[in-house]
Length: 77
Image: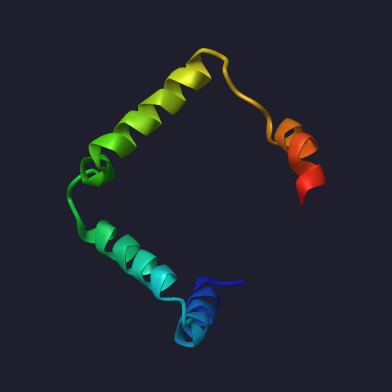
């Protein structure tokens, strides 16, 4: 599929879209493309701390695979 076809399919999908939060997200994504600032600067202090905690967990080997989590919680679905 060529890029022009993909664009047209996205336009058709967007026209039918009624989810305000998704439209807001797409709009912010579009606007971020114009921005010269790094997205990191737009995060709150708590978001930055949370990301850094996650990185420390990964570096420390404190991780679980998707498969192990699904095995544990699959019975609740």
